[in-house]
Length: 135
Image 1 (spheres, rainbow, N blue to C red):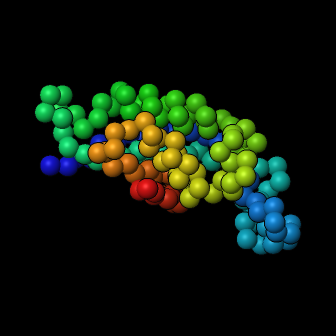
Image 2 (cartoon, rainbow, N blue to C red; image 1 turned 60 degrees about the vertical axis):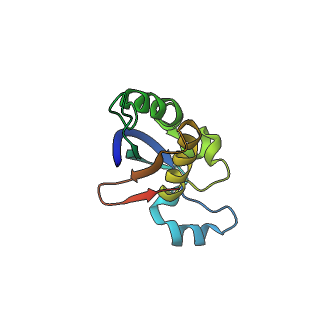
């Protein structure tokens, strides 16, 4: 029997969507206001889902206190109240789109979880825009 447990967290971060190989005009055309050279921010909502069997000894798929600590250490402490382009190594050469942020979050969490647990990340950039990554 497989069960999915979820942990939702929030973080605030600024970014600029920009492709340095393109002209300013092409960046503006593709990314619009998200290409603002002075950056812009989002109040991100992150949901981390783990799917796996229930441990017969604990009754848990995964201890939610430990999941909270993992997300805080690997994601919130790194991205919260940061400029993703300037303040994080993850996005020095990677355009910080919602899609790429979700993949980076997944990649930062995956090594710390048992292989039998399926990991899924949902990132809400706005109330209307979200992305999911399942690895």
